[in-house]
Length: 67
Image (tube, rainbow, N blue to C red; front, side, top):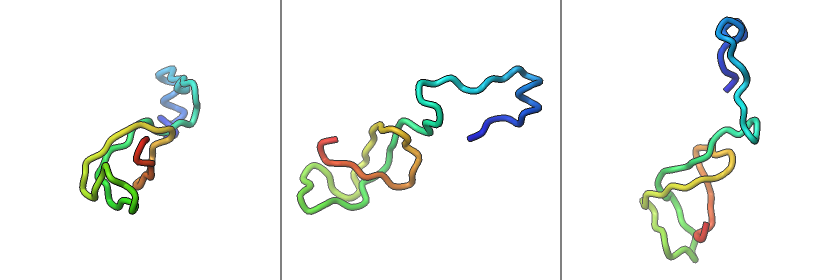
């Protein structure tokens, strides 16, 4: 996550990435539903899902049914 070594940054005049939120690691998530709660009606285990969230860099994500 740190970028090229400093020597390459100097040689190729690379700068730090510009973003509104430095340190933000990811934007999107995708996968399959593993487990649902007892009140969930729209999803079942095995359903493909995708979405966006702040800092999406994880093996597991948790969301509400209406998200």
